Structure formats: structure tokens, C-alpha cells
Image 1 (cartoon, rainbow, N blue to C red):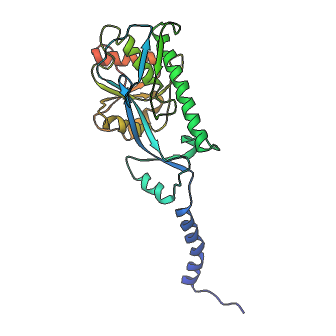
Image 2 (spheres, one colour):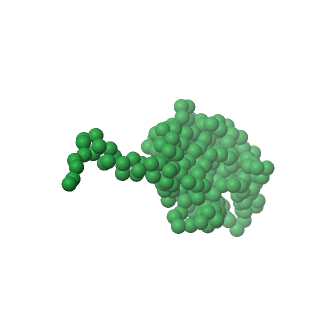
Length: 263
């Protein structure tokens, strides 16, 4: 003989699997990384006691102001990220929830990921040097550039490396500095032709830039909307697509002549 459940009993029975699922999700690791604003470094100066840009084979100039590359700090590749962690970060303005695969290559160990990031940084430095020398019509066989930035991986400092090389060798082309004495920050990959590419975590990088004194931020044009989403007050965005365009924008900002694009 079968007995019938009352409505409250039926609801309770049906709710049990849902409660169990939520409890499991709350403690199970999720395929996300949590990120926050990271360190910045002035490529025109020193980082951890070492000059970031060293040039030989050509006369260099004294510079003023700063060109700051920006970073984000993400949870370790093997870190356990729970639903509670994700919910906390979701409502925080200084944190972001990012798919793990967008931060780290999938299917690789922590050691392999570190090696991958190191290789990306080295390739970025080579491309940044080539882009800057090509822009200045200088020969890589005569001008040697060494780039050194400890504890940073990935390709997103490429644009700032190139700008730093241009500033040290040529400035604004008329005796002035690209920075105009300002603290200018930015991000973006670069290839040998000088094309600037998109990167991740732009809204967090603008926060890092503002924290470290920047008033201007160079952002890949395709990421203007992301940069504007959490833009700190007093930080001016300048979209860029090429090294040449970035230099032209900074010269126009410095001299007050010409157009400075905006997002």
C-alpha cells in the first residue's frame, strides 16, 4: 500500500537534491582564476635594482617622466577556487573572475606554464626592440638593446618596451620627452611591424596605473570598452593600434598640437 506525501513533505524531498548540488558547488574547485591589479614598472628606469632598458651602439638621452607597464596578479594555476571565492570577487571592484584557460594554457603543469610565460616575455622583448628600431630606421646590427624585467611573464609589456626604447633614443623627435614629464602607463602586445594587440585584464591594469601615479593610460583600441568599465577618476584613456600612432598621440599630448584620440 502506498502512502501519499503532504505538499510540504514533497517540497522537502524535491529540495534535497538541489541543496546537495549547491553544497557540492560551494566547495568544489571551479575552472576560474581570480585576478587583481598587479605591480607596475617604469621602463625608463630601474626595476629591482636593474635598468629595464639598456642600449649600446647609439647615443641615448636623459628622460623625464615615467612610462609604466602594468600587470595583473592572478591566482596560481593550481589554486583551488570555490563558488564562495567567485561570488566574493564578482562583487569586488578591485577583483575579476576570469576563465582559467584565458589566463593559463590548459593542460599544462605549473612549471610548464611558467616556462611558457617566460618564453612569451622573451619573444615580446625581441618584437618590441625590432618595432622600435624599425620605427626609428635604425639597424639592429649596430644598435643593441637589452631588456630586463624580473618576475614578469607574458607579452603584454611589448608596447611600453617599444615606447621606452624610442624615448631613450629619440624622444619626441624634437628634443623633448614622449612623456612630457607625466606618468604614463599602458598595456598592449606588439609585433615587429609595430602593430599593437589586445591583452587581458585591462580594467584591473587601469587601477594599478592610477594607484602608481599615472594620469594617462594607453590601451589597445579594441579594448576601450573594457578599460572604461571600471576607469579610475582622473585617468585619461588613449586608444592605440600601432607604435607610430602611440608616439604621435603622446607628442600631440605633450605639445598641444594635433589630435589626441580618446575612447
